Length: 440
Ligand SMILES: NC(=O)c1ccc[n+]([C@@H]2O[C@H](COP(=O)([O-])OP(=O)(O)OC[C@H]3O[C@@H](n4cnc5c(N)ncnc54)[C@H](O)[C@@H]3O)[C@@H](O)[C@H]2O)c1
Image 1: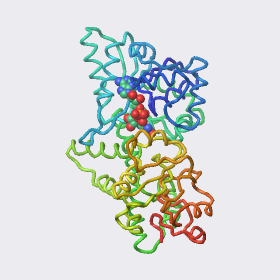
Image 2: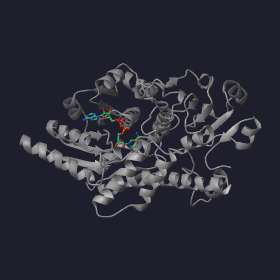
Image 3: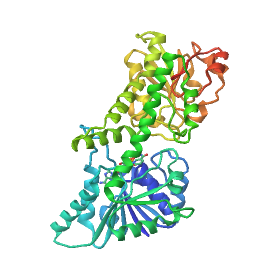
Image 4: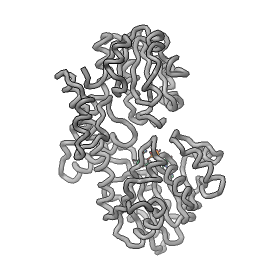
């Protein structure tokens, strides 16, 4: 099939590449000239495991191409995926300007039938809105062309995006138009061989499903984080509690880790946007208000522990920070807990020496003018002369480090573990003062 993807970010690039991988002819559009030029040279602008090889492979056989030309993009695909960003607006609602622009451009350029598919995470009612915008543009041109609009929210996880797309748990399709449903069923056949993963519903339910999924996952995290604070006060260990409840199949082990708060490009904005939608519709989402408040407090927990140990004036102190990305296997730092921590430490007069296996360039871009932040070449060199180590992102490479080398390099043998990746007893045996989340 001929497929166009509008917006070549995390979701658009993965979608386009995986659809090319199974044999489709894919054209990806973006407005970012640098991004498209980089992709045309065979380089990818983000870190995502397995993606670069797959992009190169499909580009080399001509199944995957990139363009800045909107008319070419509209002309190419029978199916037009909209995968542009929907960042939070000032009032917390999803900013729909990019989706609207993409829809408008399709209406301005289309010459024959197109199926337009919202893959971006968009408020309920967007399928109707996109349809309205395209009608408007067709009317301006004085033409009548048949088209369909459907919702197909994306559930991939950064860091495992290719695998998630190639082996999805479910493929949600929201449409009340048989032609759209059949086209999408055909497109997804290669991902659907083992058993039927298609969940077909009306567009509004599909749009709400995406927000509901992220809201539920964020709720589990905030629930555990709040319980972790109580566990600390009670002398209980949240990790034991996690295993104790996770073993119940009605609860399960996923997304039950206490830590230093959730971040990323999705949970924070989607939790906000869903609350906004509820308010606009005269109802509240009290649970999500609490989820957000708990998360905001949790992002300060590490700084609170550091201040409790070293005092509130941190001038003259240096902290080594391991992990900058909002989670392992990505270089995405949108709403990453590390950002708030770095800003907080610098504001208290401390210096920070940071290391992340892939997010160094992004950190440089975000903190370019911060003289107090030094970017280290390796995890061990970040420790040189630091007063303590703070683990913020649970990269695998941080899990079993050489503790005697850490002790030699640090000025004080102190570790703050924002992800509970070390065992408290063995780390204390190694001679460290150890602070983690929700454990005695
Ligand atoms: N990142 C994730 O893990 C993830 C997962 C599921 C769903 N989503 C949703 O998918 C959407 C995209 O997220 P993302 O992380 O890929 O965003 P992103 O910021 O990485 O990419 C969006 C891209 O769209 C481009 N763009 C903006 N307007 C355009 C236009 N008119 N024409 C062409 N390109 C345009 C931007 O330049 C950018 O490259 C969001 O709604 C997000 O909530 C994201």
